[in-house]
Length: 384
Image 1 (cartoon, rainbow, N blue to C red):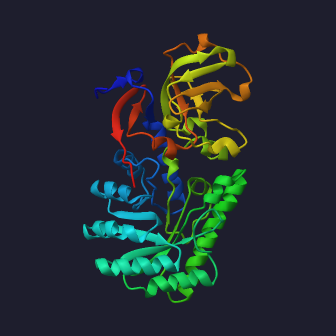
Image 2: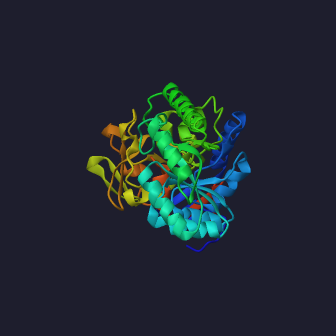
Image 3: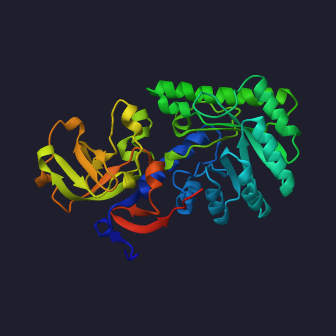
């Protein structure tokens, strides 16, 4: 469509990705104030939004110091946008060191992570060939969620010493992500996970220092644990990401309400299966993503919660099934059929997503809403 702003959202093509800026700003302010109260810097993870304009609003919220990225393409995009203090939060592979070296040579202060001696040896070799010094954080496994070194024991010290002694690498500290918080069943469980994340990361740093090795950085974080933390003593930075938008999974965890979700997918009714009580829309799993993360929570939200055009959720109406370009709107558990007369062809609806990162990843830009109008398109970066 022609970019004339502001415009009514009814003028947008469907499916489109909507971003309610005021809701997002409230989420940003909540996290910034939380970190301010705990005297800890935010190194926000940009993998959720991948947008310079969103990051500008994050910075206005305060308490930020650098950013975290999940791809080197993100690092390139944000560096070119004026951000130079960057943590690449995924284990670095040797075939990416040249791209890292290019960024460093242009003035980017880029830190990388690893968790094993085999990678350390390969990274050191490539760094020496390219004539660079790579700042490195050790990734810790504090909850068995994914990769990382155990936070206590000989392996941690062996990895720390290997980095310290490898030419081309500089040991900066430790980092972890409490992904186990996404499996919690209660706020008390999340608080316990948050305290465990903090305690184990700080203890790991202390153990490294006790060996006479450098450990300046203690970097932790997930959105649930960041929001539920009560003590960040000894932590230098925290790296939540999805808090900017929030989503149905975070609602299911209990750290957000439906009204806190800042993004939704605009879609249009294209038909009905009256005998089944289905309404068919033009947003399928290509528009919503295949993420079904709420399926294992107490309340399965299908592919997303259905709202009216103003963003008000329709009671127990979800996208229960999805094909590539077709979404099937139904009452949860098939409790009652939907009637075509209530959702005529051409009716526009909004769908709240299970996972903000995955849904946003399906689109090239956000349709930014301020009040009831679309005021801009904000481009987002993509790729690895």
